Image 1 (cartoon, rainbow, N blue to C red):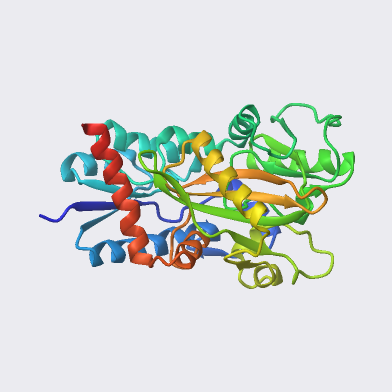
Image 2: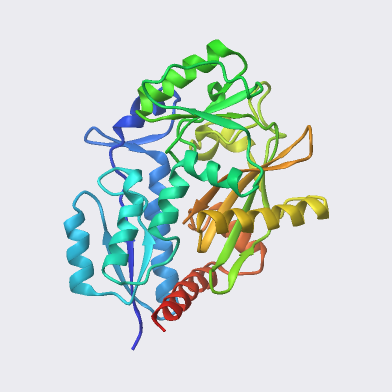
Length: 358
């Protein structure tokens, strides 16, 4: 009999903590009866639909379930349907991305195999403070950094050199990142940290801004076979408007009507010296292993113009795998097909499950 694969996802939800920032940044949002929705979340629905079609093309029996505001519904679904595997596309529950790891933990409690990284890795990756501390402790080059929690006084970071970039410590999808996130003096730093605290109600990550090339290394595989780097992608900045910062901002990533969206263009494979390419691939595998990525993931890094040094920014579990996303761009550049890549991710998850059950 065909395996029953449940595609579990979350529909776009109201995101009040980001509403003011997104509207201030002229971000593209969707509203329905007054419901504010972050444009970055709409890719989840498209991703779910593409994955379901790919699974069906490989003969799987597909169940689709939306896990939104009521965790008990997800528990009931898992208990009653008992899918052979969950293809986990759920990035939040009850409108909170911080609870993404809790959804994965539910699969674990029900002993149902699922694709992607485990609950612990999801929690580590979302907490930039923890993941960067792990990189540093394990000798992975990452920009020098510090953190300021809400309520703490902002002081001049003596150990860091300007320019600095300030980010919300527990957001993804470039939420909270625009040109004003880069600061060159203390007054700007203090204002931006206070902005992050007030708008996002979380700590602020302050790190040295690495001016240079932005590289993404997608990986596929699991702990049993190891993760394999796919062709490296680069986000190119040579077409940016005059004066724009060389960063992948929220506008550049999501706002299609913005000039930044059309001038930060991906190139895959990236044109890199052979030694740098090999170093980036090795660094990505190490970073993924430290955070605990499995099945598929993406490691973002910067290549400094000044020192030619690679710095890991983040290790991303369960990145967007819709057909036009960066991960799939790298997969296609490797000679894979979309449906074949989805099936490969499923195969890695099943292989891991079989190894655990022996």
